[in-house]
Every structure is written in structure tokens, then in C-alpha cells.
Length: 382
Image (tube, helix red, strand yellow):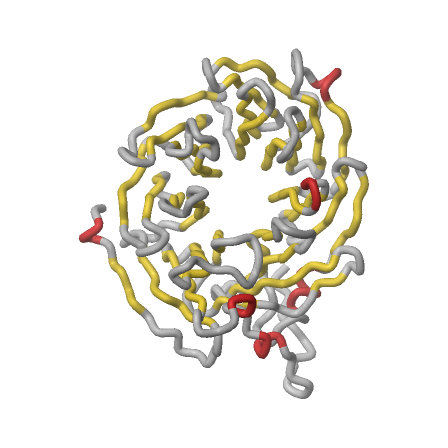
């Protein structure tokens, strides 16, 4: 589909939000494809979007202009990311249930490299790091590692997890620490120096106790780790000290108490401030309303919503990508960021530049709960 075939809808936000608006939305297709993930280059010059049609489409994050598509995967695309080093900043990487990790030239949209995890294998997550140009892949009960320079597999860690490895992440600021997370409820920490194997390089195991969906580093020296489970619970860990800091078993109800909208049905992601230890939990309703909820892990509380994105989506939201990691920052053009979901729509969210920058997209009035009209009984979807 070329740019002329794209449906670009300019919309006005119909509610009474004082400091918040939907700038525009883009329909990525004319069928029933979902948007799985949105990611951008570090300079925000190009935005990539993975779709349930096994395509990755690229757009301008400033204008929404369609740039092209990367086509080659024949099964679900599970993760995408742009390169972050000088040598590969023009490359877009993707992994898929077709068992491959591919690299694409983001200018020509052509595949330039591929590694294969093997027959009947799936790759759910990938991460670059280590001192030896390592590429890690989270697969079926295995963590595989390749030397990206020659595409040769250098290790297969198959004794640490018993089920699908949903996340692999090299720890930022380290040369050799790799974390993996799995449906088996375990997070494993590996040392990836030398001849890598399960017996000698598994340093520690953190037991979350339930199937893990996403993990992420944050805080000073990236020492803390947030973990979102498939049953919509949140836990916070100090992975270097190998201990749990906070657990939120009733995460959905705690977040739902923090705004006046319908109950939170699921969590999309967590975002953090790069300058301090602040963390936000991003939850949403099945109707597509999104909320940013501050997490105070020391007090084990989830605060009232500091921002609400409403009026853009009509179905489940799969990905939210702000320009910066925390509320109060936006692009110079006034764009806060983008979101995408199962309605096949990309929504661009606009900050009001006439407001104070630190409050540009925060509507504090939306977090004030009514004292008399609050429903006492909430529908429980599970």
C-alpha cells in the first residue's frame, strides 16, 4: 500500500480536556490487522510499526507520512527495534515466530541480514549486547546467542527455563549481564563472558511466580527492574542485589481507583524517567482509553492518573510510545507521542504548547474521583 492509499484522518478532540488533544490518526490498513508495536530511531526521524499481517511499516513520526514497508516474515512479528550504535543506526531489527531475526535497511526497506533459530523454533524477543557483538534470542524454553558479525550460534542455554522465553535483555551499562524472563515465572541472570553455558554462567534466578510478559530496567545505574506478568500484575526488583522490592498483586484494582474512567482491563507497558527513579504504569480499557499511573514502589502504592489519552482508539491498545520517558516532555512540534492497537490505527497525541512545559500534557482534573457517583461494584473480566 503506498502513501496515496493511506487514510489519514484529521480529528478534533471532542472532550473537554484542557491540556490534551488527539492531533491526528492514521489507518494503517483497510483490513483487520492489529498493530503490535511502535518504535523509533533515537533521533525520532523514522518510526516503525509491526502489524499482524507480518509486515513492518515505516512512517515519519513528525508528519505521519508513510515511507515504506519491510516484507519477509511469514509468521507473527514479536519484537522490533532500531539499531542504536553509529554503525547500525540505519538498521531496523525484527524477530518472529517464523524462527528468524532479520535486519532491514530503513532507507530501502530491504532485508540485509538474517539469523535462523532452527526448524520449529520461534523467537519471541532479542537483544544486542555483551563484549563480543552478541545477539541473544528468547525462544521455546531456550536462550540462544549468536555472534552477529558472522551469524554463528555461540551458545544454547536450555537448562534454565522450561517454557517460552518471552524477554531477553542485556543490562544497560554492563558488558556481560543478560536477563531472561519466561512463561515459567523465572527471571535468569547470565554472565555472557567466555564459553557460555548453563552450568557456569547462570548467576542467579529470580522467581516471579507467574508467567512473565515484559521486563525493563530503570533507576540509578539501571539497578532496578520492573516486571509485568500475563495476569496483569506488577513487581519491582533490585536485580543486582537479587531481591524483590515491591509486589502489586492487585495492580488492576489499584490503578482503577486512580481515575474516573472505567476499570483498567490490562497493562500495556511501563515507562520511566532517565533522570531519576520515577516509574509510570500504563494501563488501558478495552474501549481504548489509556492512563499513566505513577508507581511508588517504596510505599507500594499506585497513584492517580497523571495523564489520560482518550478519544483515539476504539479497541485494545498494544503499544504506547512517548517522545520522552516520562510525563511533561514533548517534541518541539508539540507532539507527545504515538499509540497503536487492535483497531489498526496509529494515533498521534498532541501537547498544548501554550501551557507550562512541565504540565503540557497532564490533566490533573481527570484524576479527581467523584465522591458520590463512584460505582461501588466493578465488572471483573477474569
